[in-house]
Image 1 (cartoon, rainbow, N blue to C red):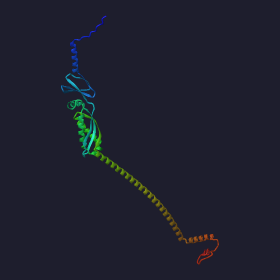
Image 2: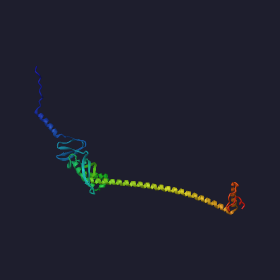
Image 3: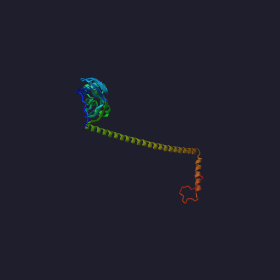
Image 4: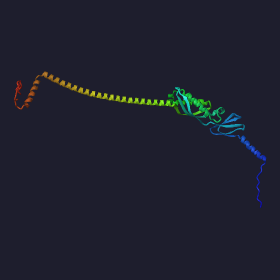
Length: 297
């Protein structure tokens, strides 16, 4: 039994040519374009900018061309930018500048500076120029002490400069801020001397405070001793005055009544007689009184 025969379909040559022509035409005249997120589509016609397309689908006639232009944040690294202070001290710094193209100036930037939104070379040149101009306004000590202000000045000046290129500054990171080795050694020595001076001043203040405290304590102790002496002197004076007053009273009494003195003498002799044992002295010197023989005198 004979096997069945399969025959390939045949197409007229004209159809094949037409199909190929359609594919080529679609490839050449494809009207659909995509603008990615973070980009703008620059539409040119015979080399001239005729429009800007937003993100998404763009439909263009075949005689126009669309170029994607990035408006995303870009960065430019500037290593060891050099400058000089107003007191002629060389200084270096490394910076990172983040920027983006202003959406309303895409056509201008595309025409004058960049077809893809990369302005790194312009940013680097402008940043070095601005750094030199700003550092020249400060002395070396002020550049160190007022670093935040220096950074703000650089930021403001760079914003104005990059706006000429249609770019807007997002932020600036300033790092590796340094002077020459000899100047840094001089600064370190100065800081060390200042720290030693402050330490000496603090120690002197401490000693002075301790001395003042000792003086206050000594004065307090002296005051206490003086107060005690004054009190004792006052007490002695009061006793002396009392004794003197007592003597004055006694003298006044004796002056008014002389019999009181005789009465006292008799009382003394009586006391002696009460204590006498009745034995006369073995030897009596000339003129010596004989006990109780002169009572009646």
